[in-house]
Amino acid sequence: MMPPRRSSAVLAALALLGWTSIGAADDRDAGHMDHGRHMDQERQGATDGQPKEAGQAAFATIAEIVAILDADPDTDWSKVDLKALRAHLIDMNALTLEATVTEEVLADGLAITATGEDRAREAIQRMVPAHAAELDAMQDWSVSAETTAEGARLVVTSADPAIQAKIKGLGFFGLMATGSHHQVHHLAIARGEPMHGHR
Image (cartoon, rainbow, N blue to C red; front, top):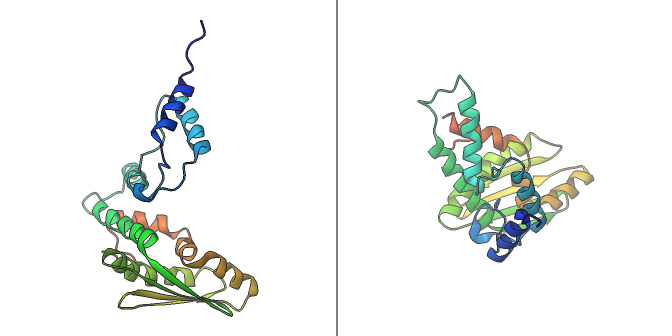
């Protein structure tokens, strides 16, 4: 008699439970199910009998930082501040999921107004000006930002038509996600090093 096919049974159970994307920043706002991705993850996890996903994006980010700190013999644990990193991740979540954004198309780029209530407004006011400074140093574009009573205003322009098209294609959220300094910033926050004026 053929042994039962365990992976098929697991996949069937997951399908019945309506397993949504594990990587979503907020499971209340998770999008459509990516069955192909989860099938690949299930097969990979089965190779050594251990799951690979931490279960939630912010938790996984903190776990990754903890592993880096733990592997570094020079880590000063008396300065480590994972609560500050969590607060920053909450800001990222609030800005991404709760900000209301209006984009004004300019001949040479975009003028963007981001607003929000309570935590989202505070996150916008902290993150947009800080990220604008990082963006301004990245490419052949000019970036400025200022806080407003309701949030912040971001203006990104360029004299290069190709960069102008990129600015318009990225829009606010694409611009905010541009650059690899986020990971370095997260590690610095966790190490207790002040960056971007973040608490």
